[in-house]
Image (cartoon, rainbow, N blue to C red; front, side):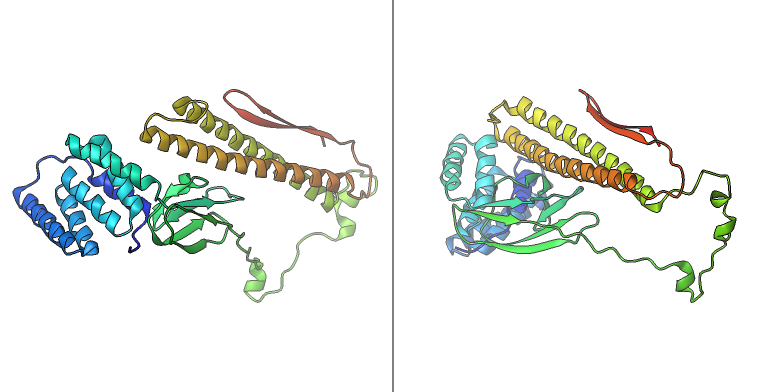
Length: 344
């Protein structure tokens, strides 16, 4: 049995071509009929790859349920089990021919046990992650077992400030789930060169001598703060921003989960395939955003702690004002917030 194309392509064919179309121009209809007859002849000769191409061409020219049924049969013969399964399910729900609709439902059920599946995992998903399978966007299907055709498939993942991930996975066995784990490594940060050095000039400073700086004048106790303390403040403020962003993602994850439960119930058991696909997408989004929220909150808390240590342990050349500060995160039914306050 030969390997086929990916499920995203199969779904595109079914959704784009599955419905009964309005009347086509006569020349286009004639061309579609010719391609259909060609596909039927090739099927009898067991030239399945060529037959599928002919049926696909006919369906694009003049979408018909009968053509889709023959295309599903051809897909089954070439090992494109997920494509055939998706086509039969479409026919079982929408075909106007009752006997063929019943037969399609039976065939889809029989194929369900044979379907290979792909499970894409991203343990530490960065923000703005994008995942494609054979060029089709499957970001919402991450962490969800998805039916897929036999054969090789190309995975690509990308995210800002991370190296791209590319891999080819080959689906060889029916009825088994293949798990692919994606890990995006941070992209290296290129060091910047001062403008003066890029032009071959020696950098000079216009700053006044140390002895003449206002902060060091006798009798002035407003001395320049330690750089260590400055870095501490910067780290703490950055940590606050990370915690706030994490809370926002947490709220978004909660909303997605609530939408899925509202659509399919607490057990997420939807009554129809359309709602099930939407529910699975909402659950996948909720999990991804929850993971991002957890990472951001942990990272933000660590940054705040580091900033506090740096600031409180910074050396002082003169009197320092008393410092007291606090970070207060909060969340409500329609908003999330982080409050930074105190005396510096």
